Image 1 (cartoon, one colour):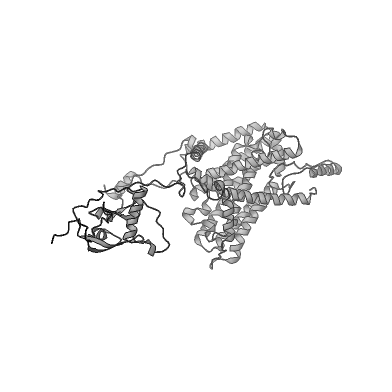
Image 2 (cartoon, helix red, strand yellow):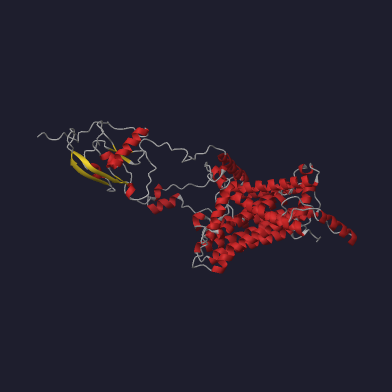
Length: 187
Length: 403
C-alpha cells in the first residue's frame, strides 16, 4: 500500500544560527563524538576463541529426543513433515517393535536434509510428542551434500551430544508421550 | 643552484620512497583500525600481533593477484592511469622537506659573497630531495594537479559510465578547489618572500607560525586539501554508495588498483607535510628544536617534530572521514565557489594590506578572524544556503489529497 500524503510528516531542517554557520564548533562536536567512540568498549566477539552465548530458543540443528527408555520419542505421525515448508523431512513409518508398549508406530527411518531446511522451527511446533527439537548448535559444516543429510541415528546422536554438553537440556516433558500416541490396540 | 652531493641525494630519494611506501602500508592499516574503533569494533587483528603484519598480507595479495584487463577498456590508457597517478603522487614529494632544512641564501652584493654563501649553504644537509628549488610550492601544486590525469584517464579508459561519472566529478572538484587552495597560500608566500618551502619554515621559526597570523588561510587550505585528496567529506569521485567504486570500478583488486590507492595515500602524506610546513612552522616548535645543539641530534629532533606534525594531520584525515558525512555535489560546488573563494580573496587582500603598510602581523590575525566570523554572520543572517530540497507546503499537500 502506498503511503498516503497526509501520513507523510515533513521535517523542516532547523535553521543554523551564527554558531552553526561557523561550522567549526559543530565539526568539533562531531570530532568529540568520533574520538569518544574510539576509546569506548568494543562490542566485537572474538569468535573462534570466544563462543557466542545463544538464547535457548535459537534455531540450530535438529535433534530427535529420546524417551526414558532410550527409544526415539517420535511416533511417526508425519505432522512435522506436513508442517515443514521446505519439505526437508522424510519419514518411513513402521509398526512399533515388540516391547514398545506406549505406541503403535515408530519411524523406521527419519531423514532431515539440513541443506534444504530453513530452520523455521515449524516441525518443533507441530510435533505432538515433543520428539523433534531445534538445538543451539550453529556451526554446522560438512564436506559434501550427502554428509548434510541427517538420518535417525545422526539426529539421536545430536540429542546425546547436546544433552551431555548441557547446552540444550531437554526442554519438554521428558519421557512422557503426549495424547497423540496411543497404546497399540489390544488383540 | 649550488652543487649537491649525488650520494646524499640518491640516499634521500631511496629513503623518502621507502618511507612513503612503508608509511602508506601502515596508513591503510591505521585507516582500517581507526574506522573500526570509531564504530566500536576491533579492526583487523588476525595477522601478527594486533594485526601489525596485515599490510604485508595485503601487499602480497595485491602482487599475487591476476592482472585482469577487461575486454572493453582502452588498454593503453587503462594501464597508463595507475602509473600516472602513482608517479605524480611521488614526484610531488620532491620539493617537500621531510626533516631538518636550512634556508637557501638570498641575493648578495658581490659574486664572491654569493659564491661564499652558496658554498656555505651546500655544506649544510637539508632533508629535501631538491633543496633550494625556488619554485618550491608552485612545483608541488603543479604536479599535484597533474595527478587528476590519473583519475581522468582511469575513468575514461574504463568505458564504464560509473567510472566516467567519477572522473568527471573529480575534475570538476579539483578545478574548483585549486583556486582557494592557491589563494590561501599566497598570503604565506607574501610574508616569507619566497616560494621555497625551506625559506618559509625559516621565516616561521623566526616570526612565529603562520597559523597564528592567518588562521582562516589555514582553514581554507585544509578544506581544499581534503577535496584535492578526494577524502571524505569530499570523496565524490569514488562515492561507493552512488558510483560502485568510482573511477577505479574496472580495476580488479590487483596491483593496478593498489597503485591507485597508494597514490591517494601518498597525496595525504604530501599534503599533511605541506600543512605542517606552510602553517604549523615545519620543524619549529616554540624553541624546543634548539634544545639540542649537536648537529646530528638537532637534525633528528627537527625531523621528529616535522614527522610528528605530519602524522597528526594524517590522523585527523582518518578521524574526519568518520565525522563529517559526504557533501552533495551542488553543496560541494557552493562551498568552493560561493564561500571559500570569496573568503580566500578577501583574506589575500587583508594580507596585502598588512604587507603593504607594514602593519604589525597581529593585525592580520584580527582581520583573519573577523573575516571568518563575518562570513558566519552573513550566512546566519541570510538563513543559510537556499539550495535545500523543496518541500511542499502543508496546504498544498491538503489540496492534492483533497482533504
